[in-house]
Image (cartoon, rainbow, N blue to C red; front, side, top):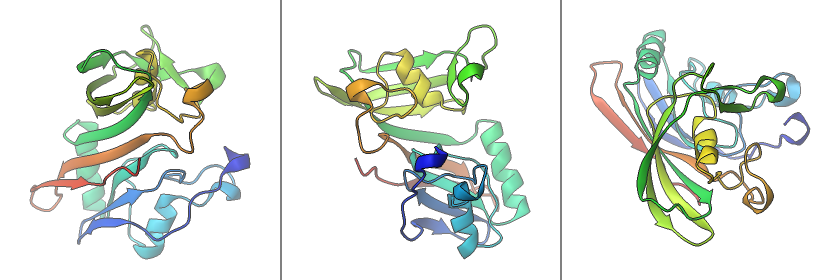
Length: 215
């Protein structure tokens, strides 16, 4: 990643901001947090903090995933939102384009995941050492060569959606880690965080934000 990290330019795509939270649409190709080394310093957190110096990290999206992310603007909000993610009280929906035609219309992947140590940061299914990981999915449109699918993770493991789709035999198009051959040959990874629902840290009102996928 370090050799070819050329994150996209452009202004922050702000979906909402108030006294406690900031919601943005993260572009594909931009790290959520800094990597190791000055060449990986440019990231969404740094760009957010340029505009909102008080902003604090709550969760992450993979570099090649785009879509809705929330940042806290106070320590109280960071703790409140962090607990919601930890206790699985947030609701996330992703849209993806995957390789091949998915035969069924809906389903659930329940496969435990852990880091593939010899090949880290890759993850893999491990029924002995893996942590529980569950993803619900629903086909939006199926073609002969690819399927558009909505993914609803119940857990938040690293690379969960990417590995679960691979396990079904339908890797996400453009995935630089898990797709191969024609499935990998795309300008970006076709995975987007479409909606995020959470409770507002000030008062607990339900909040729901959506960013349309560009693919």
